[in-house]
Length: 183
Length: 183
Image (cartoon, rainbow over all chains, first blue to last red; front, side, top):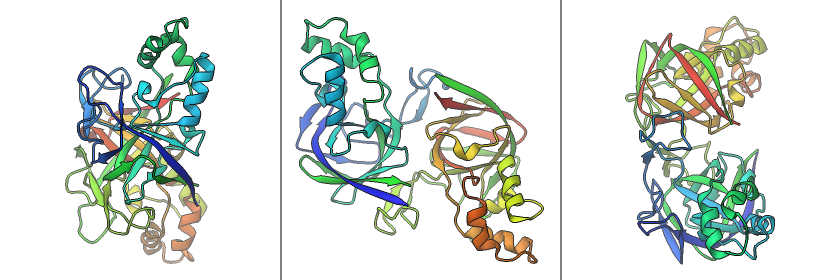
């Protein structure tokens, strides 16, 4: 049995600066096989890195990290855990921020996010936190101690998911979408 | 933390007949992005069907069902559940049969199967049983009642997984491989 949950698209973002994984808000983004054209993580393949130690460093592998998705509710919980006012999806390098499904990070792999135009993302699982977003957050809140290392723990189980584009199309801020869960 | 489990490649199979999903044993198979060239399920994309009702029937979508993997131990349990002598991986349309990890169907999505040449498959989750393999099994055991409908229940949670090719290369009968599990 499949279950559907309506969610709201609170933000759409792209990482199109050469020197940073930080994303910037846009009104909408085109989804192609491989992700968002022009985005840092766009591509059907990527180079194996520290997240894929089962492959030789730098080997070309399939890119299962095409699109990063976070929930506004989990961003608020990370902020609370760190004792800061807010965590913007951009600082986490998210491409999509939703509300209405608070425990997004626990979404079972194989679930989908279906957009109004019929396009869809396929959940590939939890996005495990690394240290880099903590460095960005530290710049925002210079008075808080050790945010880079504290971020990894504070964001564990809350940092959202990675997806591949299953059906190309468009995702647009303000739209409603459906989470479709298996069983 | 990642865990590694050695497994043995008991069989490699290809579905290269126009009119059937049944696979035939081969000594080895080439893995490309998209699957095994010449195989029925080869392709980076496929048409949405009854397994993907969230998309319009026939729409082009990403193919997460490139490679089907079963375990010899689970095939034996399906045979036991059906009261038949054996279930061959070919009858299930499997491309790869392994031994040494009995509960393959429960392998968490995001896990990998890494082959000796460095190539690898990425687990996309359980392969839910449908009625067709039961029809093939019925032909093998004509004296057994209602195998097509009984198969779905008998194979539930035992029918193996579907994978995408994460790193191209080759899989070869008799080799050892590593299952790499997240946490």
